[in-house]
Image 1 (cartoon, rainbow, N blue to C red):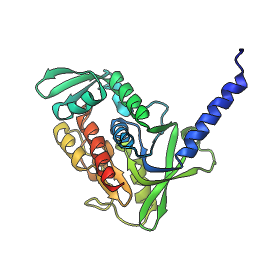
Image 2 (tube, rainbow, N blue to C red):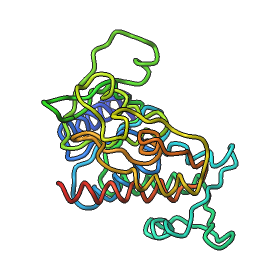
Image 3 (cartoon, helix red, strand yellow):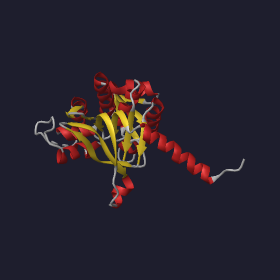
Image 4 (cartoon, rainbow, N blue to C red):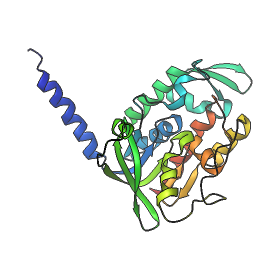
Length: 257
């Protein structure tokens, strides 16, 4: 049977339409498909929750792909090795408490595990606003990333979710929208975004986990977005805290869903 280009186009449009319609209302909407967002989505979806994950870039995996300065190896400390074991990501012991993994394998396996667990990932999609009800975030306002980048005047679409997770890393994209446009204060010492501090890997890894929590009613922060919101330092190409943060936010949300 000869291939028909129109059938190919119709198949893509129909299947994408199904994904989009099915995720207009979800249990959790995650913004940012880095390691913390992917691992959070994996655990939530595996527990039977409906999860949509929005990534503004074409690629999935955040900063994990590049390792350290494009040396595509990452470091994971012993406390997070159980997550690599759970997903089947291979690693090697370098020194006591220091383990290395191939960055490409880690990002690829994380992505595949999340999708196969049931997470619906939308890449090339940016979040430009939140859906707000009295004193609570209830969803997201989304637009194509190329439209945003080109500055075109195109109205967005809205999705509703019981909870939103900002896992956008250093940029804290969703939290910044809330600070700018939504009445009220964040659950931070200043009531606003306290800002990311300079490199301190040990402190950052501890605070990434501590700062993973609800920062505004209906809105959680995870990964580097948690440290940037609460004023913690950056940690560089060590990813245990990022993975543990995703695991933690999934656990906290499962208690509430």
